[in-house]
Length: 443
Image (cartoon, rainbow, N blue to C red; front, top):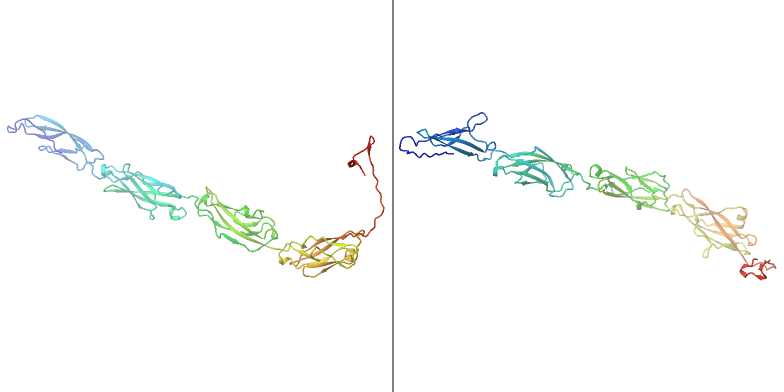
């Protein structure tokens, strides 16, 4: 800058109006060297030590003296304002930033805020932020706040913790002004959320036929499931759906083994469609299911029995031998078995009992599942009213099973005896000469 003084003396008359300039109050640096000098003739002020640093001092005051040829002086103060040039790079407040984000965070969620400072001013101090590296799939974006010189890192795409390369992101960040830049890093840790339910592999199990006589504790099949989450979100337990096993005949252990928990009966339930549930420990918990088809194999554990409730009647005084009618439609005796056909018919029949039963009746087995009962003599109901015949029935199972069924044979009555005289004693009570009502008569 140039300092100029005015002298009112006549410049043509000697040297009274000739001015010379000098600095009488300078500014020193750290080692006491003057920062400025002045041209004694023109009054132009120069810097002595090269460039100034506005970031250290942006204003200097220099006192300049003007002296004329007659020895008179005047002083003035030069205010030197240092203008900014872009000589400083923006600097991050941290070299490494750390952030955490859940994998179920929605797009545009704010993940982290980074800041930088630039010692310059004005346009030279305007900083913009960008992501240089560490985000090949462009999962994140950074938005510059020019007013506050900060950058907002936001989620640009959904992330998945179950993908190993999406569990940790190490972003290389750049803060730059018009000429300079600096680098920082932001390490983003993705946190797992319970977004995966347990999945069975396979989801349907069909096991070999299971004998209905297997003991409690028999292992049936081992199911397996996988949960892609981690920690508690990936841990799960097994249980059976109650409605698939209302009787509690099965259980499932923590290792996935389905086992027999109670006695089985093919005649009650021939097939179980068990639903195994896997429930994880996340909040809220998620579940998966698999179906286990268990078919029971019949064993010969039921003895034969009469096909119907037979109540035959043999009339007294009827000539023998007499084929006994079992019911209104048939003279044959039939049997049934609760087991399957392989353990059922054909049945064999055998009449048991004492000598009296065997002499009174004959049971003829036709070896086709039916038998015929014949009365071998004439009966008198007044002597013998009923016979209980034990009949042994054997099925065709391997090994065969037998049971004894009792056939009740009633002797029907006929009017074969005349009337005979009889008597009755009556006891009658009276009170005051009056008989009691008929209902009080006691016979």
